[in-house]
Amino acid sequence: MPIRLFILLMMVPLVAGGCSTYSKYGRGEECERTIKDYSKAVRWLELEQAALSMVAKEQREAYVQAAEQVRRRGVTMVDFRILAQECRPEQGTAEAIMEFDYFAMPDNRLKTASDRQKWVYREQSADDQVPGWKLTSPPPQFK
Image (cartoon, rainbow, N blue to C red):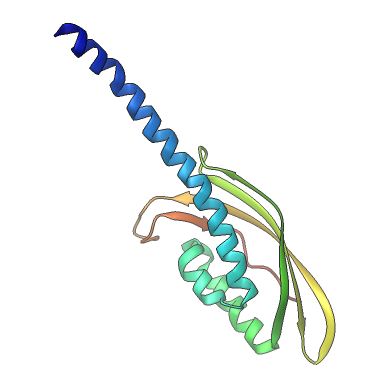
């Protein structure tokens, strides 16, 4: 009986540590998926939707204003590229660099907006009802 108890006591930290590592690994995959989903939302000019679900509360107003400006100017997205991304789930931070190709009529020249993003992982709080990766950097500028 004491051997079983000893083995059981030795396995508890291993199982707990494994669950923590698995949780952080899942956060890494979630980070990559969130960055891609955000890129697609901007590509299809769904800035309001992106603001509500993926942007930190302190940046939401800026995103809503950017969405209004994009709509008023008649911006049309053509493509986007994720140039680089680095997810650090153990630290709860991430960074990404993207480019968005667009044009705004009546000017038919193709333009490129570069967007350097900073992300943080937030647990469920009063500000963010849904836990997950939240964008803390300002919206891209489509000049």
